[in-house]
Image (cartoon, rainbow, N blue to C red):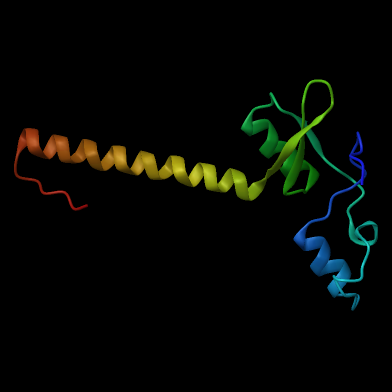
Length: 115
């Protein structure tokens, strides 16, 4: 099928569970248009992560269609993407903290730091 210039909806795993399976429809037979959410929340690719999270919160959505300046689709940002990114950053912070504690223990002696 040719690529369309604008999004007319979005289908998520939740749409499939709530609408298709709850109504007894087979995912193999249901049309995407029957289960899609027609409201697509969009955000500019230059928006901050905070702005994206606020928009998800206000809109009650877990995914945002990311648009380029010219309106072309750049991708999709999901809440899961955000959580994974933040978890990776928190892991780095934990390593830095442990490293600093070890350094201080070595400098000032006596305190043994696990890990």
